[in-house]
Image (cartoon, rainbow, N blue to C red; front, side):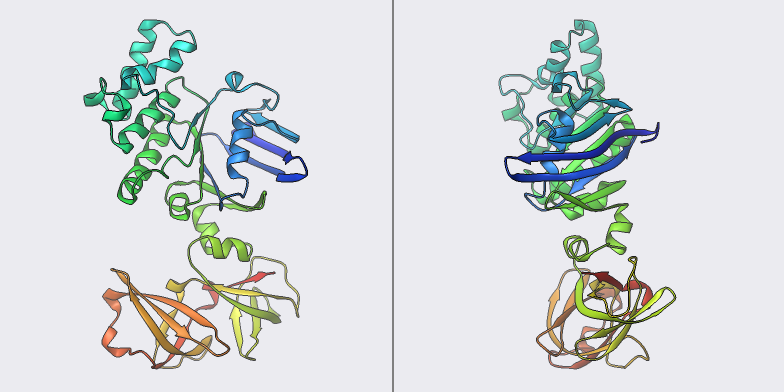
Length: 360
C-alpha cells in the first residue's frame, strides 16, 4: 500500500461454514479511482464489497482505508457509504429529507444540513424535484437521490452495489456518463460492483475480474479487453473466438501454435509458455478480416454461414472443420454485403498482434 491508496486488501478471506466465498484476495485501490469489481453472479464481488462496508466480517486478512485498519470497525465507524441496488430510499420522505437524513443522524446542525442538501441537489440536478417523494420520481431520479444521500456526508470511499441494474437500457447508458462525471467532480473513490461488462469497460479506471471467489485479473479496461490473462477473462469480457491449440515453437515474442487440424498460426502471449503446452488462441471478432482472397499468413479457411445485421456492423459465422465456427464482425460502412453469400468459401485473416495464446 502507498500513501496514494484509498483501500488496501491484504489476504482477505471469507468463509461461510465449509464454503469459501472469497479466497485470500489482495489488491490496492488508488485515491480518486473509479474501481470496478466485475464478475458473474456468485463470484464473490458483493461479498467483498460488504466486507469493505463492514456488513460482513472477514474470516482472515486486513482491510486498510488510507493506511488505517478498519476490518474490526462497525459500519457506522467506517468513513464509507453504500448505494444499494434498490436505492433504499425512505418512501414517506421528500428528496430533501432523504438527502439530509444521514446528516441529521450524524449530528450536523440544521444550517449545515440545509447548505449541504442544496449543494447535493444541485450536483445531481434535482432542483425541480426537491419536494417530491420517491414514488413521484423516475428510476433515474431515485438513483440520483440515493447517490446524493450517500455522498452528502463526504465519505472517503463510495461503494456502489449494482446501482444501474434496475434501470432500462437507455437510462443505464445515460447514467454511466453521469456516474463517471460525479466521481470526477467530487474526487471520491468509487468502488463499483457489476456483472455488466459494458458498464465496467465504459466507466472504470481499473477493473478486477472475479470468478469463484478469486481475482482473475486487474487492469485498465483496454488491458482487460485486449490482453486477457486466461480463458475465463477472455470469454467473460466482451465476445471472443477461442481456438484450442498447442505451442509448437517460440520465436522471441511470437508464439507459433498448432491447431488440431494441423495448421499453424502465429500469436503473442502475456504468459510464460513452453513448447508442447496446451491452451487456446483468443481473437476478438472485430480483429478478424474476411476475404475471398487468400493471405500469406494466419489464414483460416471456412464456409460463410449466418450473417447477423447489428446496425453499424454485421457479424458473420464462419464454419470450420470439426464442427468449429468463428465469429467475424465487420463495419457496414466498409463492407459490400453483395460480395458475400451464405455457403461461399472465405478466408479469415488476423495480425500477429491481435491474437493471444492463453494457457489452460
